[in-house]
Image (tube, rainbow, N blue to C red; front, side):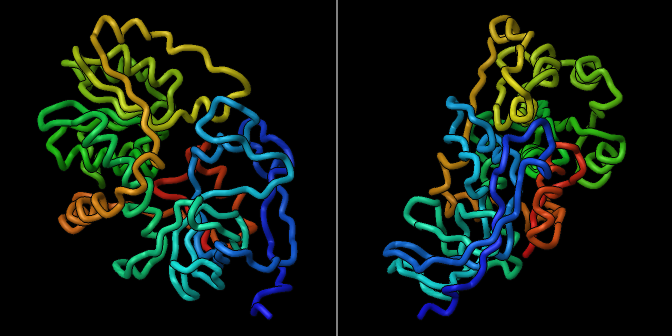
Length: 340
């Protein structure tokens, strides 16, 4: 008999569609007995759950998103890190450390061939590093700065949600490439951290400042590159301040994720024509296969002290709703994870 068959597996389900950031009311913790594995499956004992704002889209019933919505009553999913407990897949053996799309649960039942499953190397003893600099957020920051926007030395680079995981890394990567970097974040403490600890050239507190006016002061020659994580009014403020032939990389749209219904705008879309702008969205699963290319480049920056990432760690599966909420309330700096 399987060593974990008949073991209880606690898991979070989507009980109802969340309204705004009311995740504690939308999620329910359930338990079931683990089933026997089928051919091609592995069982992962989850060690780290990655909290990612894009997961919020899975919780809606939208049909025009980048992934179908999670049905009500279904298990909530996201990127997980863990150890293979059992395997009925030839490429995976018990004891291997893996990263994959799994369930927010004690254990993830995974079909590796369809869930971006990767056997992790031994470069980092701390598992959570593989959802930090050396995971999808790090790759997204790299692609957005280096490829989507092709940021060059001497250019003015602005990033929103700049104290969050991807934004913080994007700003540091742009700085390492010789850009003048301005971050937009919520609260004076975060802004001070960006300029004092992480080398940003300026920071704007969107909670207290007129962002459009502040950008005009800090970017008198215009914004060459805007790395957008939020959309909404902050995108409009950036569009109004773009330089001729500027580039906008659309990485995330937190404003849209939590809205009930369509979000109006951008109201300053006319600037796309007036300033001859290029706007491009990009999505991390499109380049997951390029991990062997990205991680050595990111490791060079980290070794040189040019790329650092703090973690916001919550402990225990029960902490998942509160940890996920931090992504949308500005309660975090850097990467949010749940350790089990």
